[in-house]
Length: 357
Image (cartoon, rainbow, N blue to C red; front, side, top):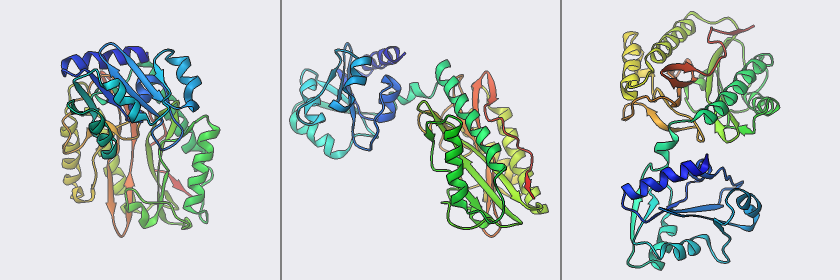
């Protein structure tokens, strides 16, 4: 699988008139090779030319790289980028990932490779990543299944008096018990007025009766993410909450119906704004309708005002409309979806209004 992906990149080098490209983005390296580091530093570099591949890494990862790419790796005595410059000396035009290469890394390359042309490249690997293959879809479905199970388990625990951070910790624990490798992101557990902040940070605030509880979470499985949000009510839901909840649900369901091959992702977002406007709620919808999900929790395709994509078979993405009233609270409903001719919803947990009494 990985070799076919690398071959696609090599074909693109010919189209872009590049001799080679330096791939530094860890997510792109994982997509192309299955190699994944454990830290924050550069643990792999990839130099891909039209007919060759070299992976630069450290002794720590030698066994794994040697297993997967025997004869195509280097463990340098000096720095990774010093080693990359040696390889690049035979190429006139060298591409690099514009959104990932650090300026000091670029300086090393320029200093040691005078006379070479360095070409910034955007989206070369990401354009392939936005269309998931059968194996990727299978893995993502499992991540979504773990998230669904976690939600039902956490519902049994929620009660007044528990803190947001306690619920957050339990989500992580339960996900791992269901087989997750980790979390897609730190879960958002927002109660009361905190739910009006789309990316609220969980605190030691205790859950209370008669307030909103918004939970946004995702499991990571075999390197791939899921994303999921439900908003529930602790106690008997007020009529205002019910009305807003139904507007958000209607908006999401309308969007999902229109997710199909060839449909504009920007138009989908705009239609959701129009639906909210019908209820004079559009000003309380403050973010994009959705985003692609895969190795990263946010990736192509974007689904918002600046999106230029059209839906294609194999795209996996989240649809997450929300309304946020500062002095009341927020309501968001988010499902993970797949385009397979039409939209298939991978998140299976109920969207009926839930009251915890």
